[in-house]
Length: 212
Ligand SMILES: [Fe+2]
Image (cartoon, rainbow, N blue to C red; front, side, top):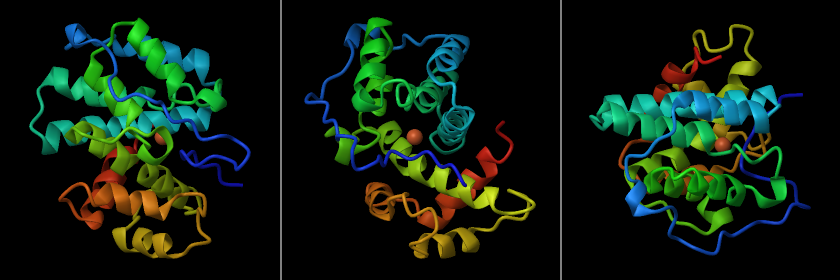
């Protein structure tokens, strides 16, 4: 069976709205934990290798987008990377309180509020927090697509090698393929940015193919 991690959850799991829209303390702007600490948190909270891979892939794509497309400096790119790396950190251990727990943890750690807001808004329909910044919008765009493209790679004998955008577009139109990936969320996320889907798919393929 293909395992894909998406923010869609079994019917029995209640949807948790966070009930607030302000996160972290503005005094902590620029305060980012070392990447080693973020990886240590994942090692502790996320035994599932596939879920860890999902977060590492989203982190790689986020960082690359910040550097290549937003002209970000190193500190800003690290914010994008950390948001990707930690956005689902509480999913496995605290599925019923997904998003709330990691947010509280990052607030306790005095992490930059921009990173916390991005994590809080990565599923607006679930958590009730609207993406505002470009970093917020891009994690929403990449989250589902990254998992979807990885699912497509897993069923190809050559994985990412030779994968083309057209085949991904076709699979997105095939409702039965990776049915748990919400096409509505993908479309909603894309409607908030100016980059076409084809370009986003190619970017994801290019930047997550070598992540292990
Ligand atoms: Fe995710």
